[in-house]
Length: 133
Image (cartoon, rainbow, N blue to C red; front, side):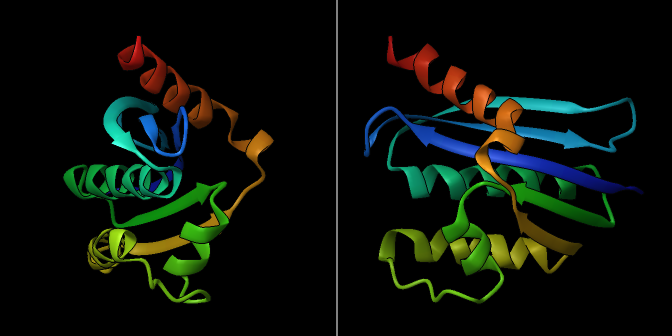
């Protein structure tokens, strides 16, 4: 199938707090996909990983051959690239699962400034706010 590009973001209203993820997936047949999902009471780093996981799962379901992800989370990007060790017990299993899924694709990930990830951020914030009210 195709080469997909995903912009991902996760956020919480408080750390931890009500949380949501946002994913903008480009390159899918039929156009771009936008996902805004409530993920419960989480901290920011867990939310960022869950956004990445959502993009990876989506790419696998769409039978993509390649996925490039843009994230404004330096921690997630550097841990996925192996530049930072993942020592946090709460993040380790998420990191492991994301790495395992990433091996099924031609996968790459890059850090992007927050202002260049505005749509994914808006989706994540809307999901967190929608459920917290």
